[in-house]
Image 1 (cartoon, rainbow, N blue to C red):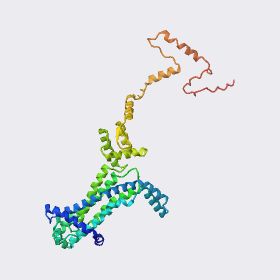
Image 2 (cartoon, rainbow, N blue to C red):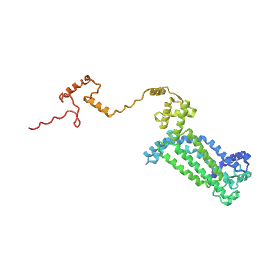
Image 3 (cartoon, rainbow, N blue to C red):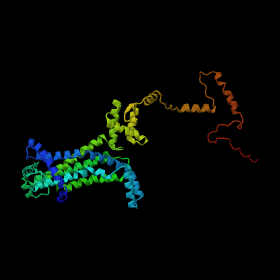
Image 4 (tube, one colour):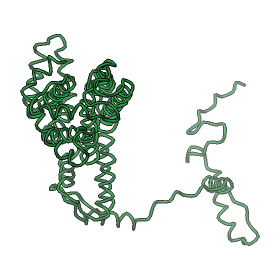
Amino acid sequence: MDTIASLFSFITTPVSWVIVQFHKVYGAVFGPDTGWAWGLSIVSLVILIRICLIPLFVKQIKATRAMQTLQPEMKKIQERYKNDRQRQSEEMMKLYKETGTNPLSSCLPILAQSPFFFALYHVLNSIASNDTIGVINDRLLESAQKAHIFGAPLAAKFTDSADKVEALNSSLTDVRVVTAIMIVMMSLSQFYTQRQLMTKNVDTTVKTPFMQQQKMLMYVFPVIFAVFGINFPVGVLVYWLTTNVWTMGQQMYVIHNNPTPGSKAQASYLERLTKHVTRHGKTRNRRERAIVKAIVAKGRDRNEYERKFVNGLNKAGLAAQADGTVIKGESTAADQAEDAATPKRQQPRRQTKSKRQSGTAKAAGEPTSLTKSEGPEDAEPAAPAKKDTAKPAGSTRSRAQSGQRKGPQRPKSPSKK
C-alpha cells in the first residue's frame, strides 16, 4: 500500500495544505491538539472534494441510466456474436458511439477520489512514522500525534502492535474497538447505499446481466472494505466513512427527486407529483416541468407508472402539455360530465319460476285459467286455438313435445298385415 500511495505523492502537498487550513479554523474553537480539530479537518476535506465532484456525479447518473437503457441491445449483440469476441467488441463500441454512452463515466467519481484518498493515507502514515510531509512541519506533526478520536490516535491502525500504540499515548484496546466500530459502520453504509440503488432505483421491468452485477457488488464491496479497513489509519477511516455517508445522502436525494424510469422510486415520485398538481393545478418548478415534458414526449412508450400519472391528471380535469406545463382539460371535463349524466345500465331482475312457466305456456298457445273477475267474453279467443290444433301437421311446424326430436318427423313404415 505504501508503494501505491507514494505514486500519488505529487498531490500530498495540496492535501496537507487544505488540512492545515481547516485545522487553523477548528483549532481556534476546540484547541489545536484535540481530535475534534484534526478529525473535523479531515471531514471538511471530504466535503470540499465531494462538492467539487458533483458535476462528475451527475455524469455518473446519466451514464448509469444510459447503460441500463442499452442492456437489452447489448444482450442481443452478445447472443448474436457469442462465438466471435472481436466482432462482439466492435458492435459494442459501435453501439456506445451511436448512443454517445461511455461505460467508464459511471466510475468517474471513484477514480477522481482515489488520488486524494491515497494522498491522505500517505500523510497520515507519515504522521504515524514521525515524518514531516507537505506543509506539515515538526510543530504540526507533534500536534497531530497528540490528537485522539474517542481514545484512538489519528494515525493508529487496527494491526498496529502494542508498543507502537503506546508510543502514540494510547492503548491497544481503545484503538481496536474504535477502528472495529468504524469499519463496521463503513461497510454497513456501503451496503445500504448499494441496496437502496438496487431495490428502489432500478427499472424492474427489464432483467439484464447489469442488474446481476450490481447485486453482486452489493455484497462484495462491504467485504472489501472490511478486509482492507484493518490496514487503514483512523484518519483514513474517518475520511472513508464520511465519503460513504455523503454518497448515501446524495443518492437518497437523487432517488427522491429524479428517480430512474420504471423503478419503484418513480412510482412514489409520480404519486406525490399527481397529488400536488391536482391540488394546485400546475407544476412547481423547472425540474417537474422537465419530467412532465419527458412523459408527454414518450407517447405510447410510457411505462405503467407514467400512464397512471397521465390518467390521474385526466380524471382531475387536467391535461399535460408538450412543454411540461399542466392546464385544465375542457374536453376531459366534458367527457366526465357526460359520463356522470348518462345513467348506468341496470341488470334486469330475475323472474320467479311461476312467471317463467306462465310465459312459456303463453308462447306455446296453451289456454290460461280464468279468474273470477274474467267474463265470458274474455274466454272467446280460446276457440280459434282449438281450430289451429286440428290443422294437419304438414301445414305448420308444431312444437316438439318432450322426449321427441324437433323438426319434421320421419313417417312410420306401414305395418304388415
